[in-house]
Amino acid sequence: MPSSSRFAVAVHILTLLEMERGRRLTSDHMASSVNTNPGFVRRVLSMLGRAGLVRSRLGAGGGSFLAKAASRIRLLDVYRAVESGDLFVLHHSTPNPRCPVGKNIQPALRRVLSPAERALEGQLANVTVSEMADSVIARAGRPMGNRAQT
Image (cartoon, rainbow, N blue to C red; front, top):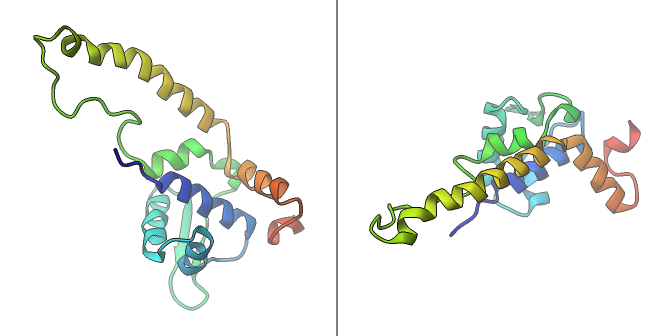
């Protein structure tokens, strides 16, 4: 079952923008940091833009920047901006209703997965992009980028 890296890349991008706040970054620059294709970065930026988390300007001196303070962007906002659907997906086809397991497995799974999803959302709601930037700075052991001057 494939998983999406959009959330991790989106948090990476937003943290990078916070670290370089005030400086517009190109998708090429961000792609270099993420070590991915600039086209993928642009697709993620587009999703973040639709959610009101980033703004982008075209042309000379253009680039992307945070649309609001990093302390006001929760990771849950980021998750909702770039991921679609439920975290856990049940069977793609209906299990056999004549089988005791097939008949009862989905309600049993929902009782476990619903609270797990709520727990994840609760955790993501308690962390901001600003805190992610602080964590990166702490792990680096030294000030980084323009953020060190603030």
